[in-house]
Length: 371
Image 1 (cartoon, helix red, strand yellow):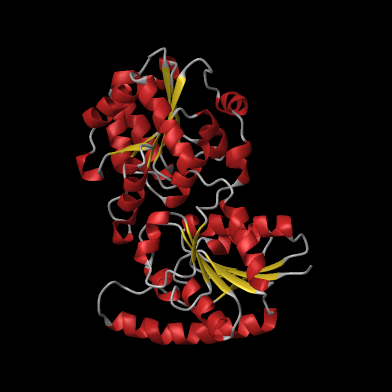
Image 2 (image 1 turned 60 degrees about the horizontal axis):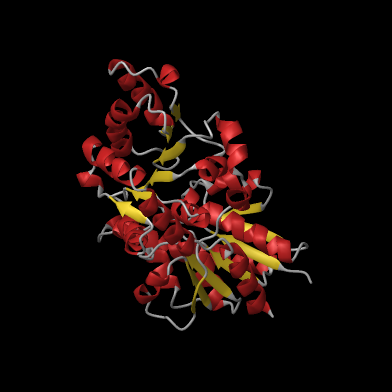
């Protein structure tokens, strides 16, 4: 069978990478599937999507400010124009299904498709839906949610299904042995993976300085810390001032960015992470116990809601950003590494929350919608 899919999503990697994973899952089931990705010129998708080899078109749209303003009036006018732009692209491409993974670019695209009678689906990664997905939920045929707890936050609940959040296949296929070799780690030590996301997290990085003072040179654990590009030099400089030589400590690896994150996840015994939906989906797919510090300025504070689900299910310890400091983080790490049974229980709870087949179930639903 032939299939034509329009995919839309953008702004951040959290909307773009799940979209790519869903496309790949559809192509696994329908190899002849043709794809058009609609995004904006300003979003990361303009750089990422063409490199992935997909046809890419843009519409002129921007997000709403969270207050009444003249800018919002201009945005409404622009949005009406972008609905017509979307309509034209849909008429030209003639998709069988249109899928949105979040970001304001989805609004006009999914709205136009719904009005034209094309089967539509949105995927909401967070417990608290974004404003665009909340509006679209009234128009689309299907809503795939990453968390069961998200259902109550939609008014139109009859067309919701719990898919989990799509993760890259490499996250599951990477092995511990590969990770140990690729990252130069010691297989006899317990590994703590620290990452604040692709741009880093200053509060986590600052708290880690005290953690290094405490744990440098320990024979039983090793710290693999991804600082983010902009934070890296400052952290390395701070450690020098504290007279910590990472090359001699024997259990500290600090990187500005990690291209092989799936391999790092394969060796992680504990993770210290933000609460972005994609990062948490990867942790739970591998069943990794975690210490989660939600980013406090996320829209609708959605990261804290994501984190609390993990905590309630026994998969994570949550520390609020405002309460994070070196001594709190050290105490939490101590508590986990000194109680192997608790760590095992957290790992089991994490795995139970994981949805490694999320992309496949969304792809199957897309196929069912067009049949």
